Amino acid sequence: MSMSDRIRILVPAVAVCAALSACSLFEDEKPAYVEKPVDELYNRGVDQMGGNKFADAALTFEEVERQHPYSVWATKAQIMAAYGYYKSNNYDEAIAALDRFIQLHPTHQDVGYAYYLKGLTYYEQISDVTRDQQMTRLALESLKEVVTRFPDSKFARDAKFKMELTYDHLAGKEMEIGRYYHNQHQYLAAINRFRTVVDNYQTTTHVPEALHRLTEAYLALGLKDEARKTASVLGHNFPGSEWYMDSYEMLTGEQVRPKEEEKAWYDKLKIW
Image (cartoon, rainbow, N blue to C red):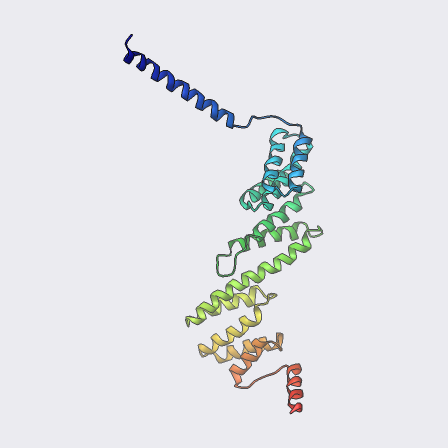
């Protein structure tokens, strides 16, 4: 056999060996599946949580359910996995896990916490008022579920508090859009936004300004009676606010001072 014939036979053989070696190498990289006792897996997840390894803990708790789906630990592991995803800021996985838990275990003792954690997951994704407020609306819906379904739970109080903050945020978004329209002299569009704040977000911090902006917009359109009525509402509900003083001055050309401020002003005059 010539040398060239030997090389032709040797090259395919070498290629086959190289391919087999590569396959063996990749196989070695795959972790071998080893079934572990349920308590060992669950405790490992707890330890990972304690060490702030939240993403690892979530995967470990998912393994509890995968390896031992019918154990008493599997259900608890589901919500622990969701918490691990939440703490690692993997919000999409957290919400998916919580929705699954709520669907599978609607009467479980921890379902109230699942709704609350879902609300927190959306709440922590709320952006400033210059951006889209979809997460704010989703947070509000989820927190409402907690207050409505579990009014006596230990989570309801915090859910109510955070609901007020979401209302304030949504009102702030309406004000931000209203101010834009007002600055563009699109007064009807601005009025619609400010009225939304007054009608739908009455307990928020934005109402005094909304009433003042309404007064401004009505005056800009020549609707003096509407402007006076709105300023009257502002003065009745927020008599000491800067917004009322601005509206009063705008309508009358005169300044108005709260009694406390007026007394301080006169006291200052006495010094001279």
